[in-house]
Amino acid sequence: MLKLLFTILACSITALDISAQSTGDSSKLSLMFIGDIMGHEPQIRAAENIYDGTYDYDDVFKFINPLISQTDITIANLEVTLAGRPYTGYPRFSSPAELAVSCKKAGIDCLVTANNHSADRGNKGIKSTIFKLDSLQILHTGTFNSPSERDSLYPLIIEKNNISVALLNYTYGTNGIQVPPPEIINILDKDQVDRDIEKTKSLNPDMIILFLHWGTEYDTIPSAGQTALAEHFLSMGADMIIGSHPHVIQKMVMMNSEEDSLKKPVVYSLGNFVSNQRRQKTDGGAIVRIDIERSGDSVKVEQAGYYLTWVYTPSENGRRKYYILPCSDFENKPEFFSSHTDYENLMKFVSDSRRLLNSQNINIKENIFQTPQADSLP
Image (cartoon, rainbow, N blue to C red):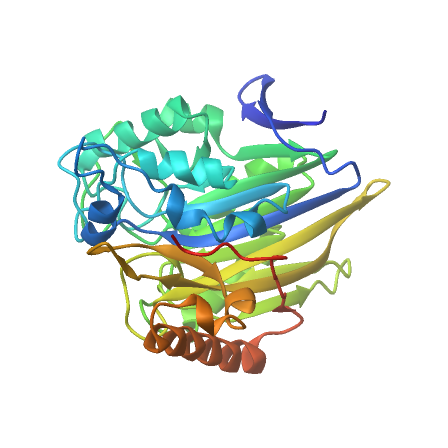
């Protein structure tokens, strides 16, 4: 069985084996990128067992799990801290660690942790989040306990199927919350990112991926600053850029390098994967799949596509539930929904998203996912 190698970069390079599924083809690697995993207070209440005070988020992922499990490596933005009690939502997020447990069970391999809520519970929250992800053996990057830890663990190198990818993660800021030493949150500073890319290139990964928390909240059009940074970082050697933070979907563009004719995807914003935000366009997001292929010494992006997802929040036994649905499957199942209004809201999100992406995307099209027979709600 092939192994997923988490390569710790230090003066010498060592590898920690973490079990993973083999595709049976050592020359191809499929990546999946997921947007904002949030933890508003209604989500925390929905996950709580009121009889014993435990938490369980497994149901949140039950309908999206078959899609996530199709790829080799899945990476998502964890936009909460795992800082312990009291568990709180906006504006200072701290979710039960069971949220990360369910992410792992659903097939999410890696969580990026540099975002504007990383410092919500201060240095102790940063440290606790890192500790809990390490305890669960979930790969992560973007926040660190100390400068020496960052030096040794950054960039994160993931290797599978004879292909290695380097993952770098940054946020535009932390909502004005200062982070005293020694803990570190990677800030989106152009010069620092340039230095990190140069360091990463010296390690010779096959692909360099930037996961950036940037842009303007609720704006479906990338800012001029996003576009300029994307072009700059690609010119510096990044091979793909994935964006989060606006809480709505923004365009996806397949850039073609004139120098070597390689395809370089830029996904400006994936939107929300799961949250309690129900405003138009914030109640869903996109999952992006990118397939990489090795041919001899050449490694290139073969294709990229996206899946639309929507958060369904029915009331069951007097309590709100949260289910992430693959839209291309459930748009054909109006009978699945507890009310026609819910189905209409799904279709409104689908219509808005397709109108935006069909008009603005370049060479990245929608993928269609349908389960043979979707589960029914209890």
